[in-house]
Length: 295
Image (cartoon, rainbow, N blue to C red; front, top):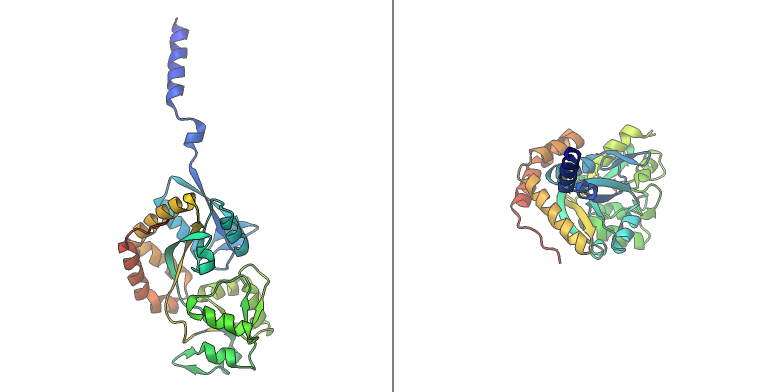
């Protein structure tokens, strides 16, 4: 009888426990594109970067989600979303093409793109108030520039770059997934200039062998902070996930010290000091914004 009693008690306790599947956290797959300084990848695994750390700030607000990372080229991320895979991707610029396959959640802001040149090339630029005109640069037949095939450039310079490429005034080159090879080509004198963010060049210079060091020059046409966000697949799952991520973004933005520390770690000191107040203004606006609607 005693054995029967304990058997019954054990069965009751086991029945009260959730099954193993219920204990498993919901998985959120991030399709991440390697980009030095933003998403650093070693042997196929994400090991750091400003965007990776930014995801961790969201993860702390979403403990019910288990984050998993898949390292993919941007074209594959967009293809997977277009196929209705349950996936999100961070650190993306908004574009009409991406809006067709995903829901966009504004998250961070990036400092503007600069033009990267060798120090001796800088002396050839027509610089006024510390800036060079993109139009002047693209019209200069003596300087060789390029854009990366796999990059989406900020809206304030995108159309000019597309037009210049269509007219043969600037080359479009492939290579590494995020175009870091173009920075190396400038360093090794195969190109005269490319466009990129200071944080990316800083990371590239730490890990690659450069023939000539590069300097960054602000563009007159690109002086404002650029909105960077998250895309989730444009389906029912993506709408639900984008809503949860939007809530987490607004919560983190309401206490911006963690965001500011992130920027301070990854930006050159003079760049962080220049944009600090603009960053604070952005996070205040993002925290007070109403929840986004996804249909």
